[in-house]
Length: 316
Image 1 (cartoon, helix red, strand yellow):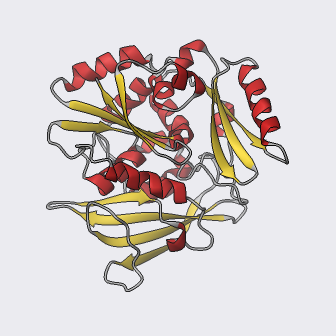
Image 2 (cartoon, rainbow, N blue to C red; image 1 turned 60 degrees about the vertical axis):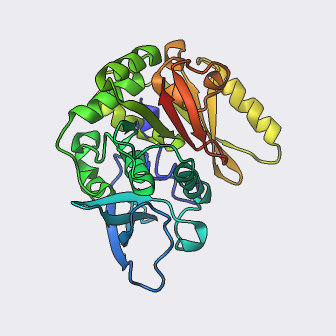
């Protein structure tokens, strides 16, 4: 658990598992906020289901004065105002923003799948940041829209309140989803079907959900069966993969997942127990054990082409 919470901001050229800001105990603050109105001639094409009113750029700085820029879209439906953290295409990003072209493409893929995410009889379950993006891009009927303050240490709650567009007050959906994700997949899926009964339930996950593990842990008493480490590619990709496989078998289950975070580095995740392999979160993400042994109660509707970043499932 200590390893997860102390991952560090990785601001020096390493793509940060964007929107995870994994070191949630660092001294973080929003040092700059810029709004770009939709009427502006240089307002980017966002490809959302909703017409955006404003694109807000929030610059978050840490103790070492390094900074990351986050993009937040402000939009309305017929009755209310909403916000969503989004990824911009590289040509639309500022020079200090992390390269996240595959992330932006993945969300457009989800929009273009044609899945009936906006159906009144359909409900989409995803962690709060995924839910925000899914709603903006596809008008999905989502179960979560905002995180809870208690997900974050008190010293960073001000930053997360700004990044998320505000904290929610109903604790039950977030706590229940965290429980489902970290419990045995078969038990979780039966519980989900009982809870939603006549609804068509879909689940969306991204690789960045692994950087939200401390948030899930804050809401449950369940163990976190995942660990992470960064590997350098150097000159030989085959050697690096061999190192990852050896690490994944060392005091762990042998199941692993890779995230590319720079041209020369990857972040590897391993599952630390057999019970961990059977959790719902592990069965939703492209771990090696899941790819060879998927859960029969889940139908994969879409997995993004680039790096398997984003996955959409339907509960059967």
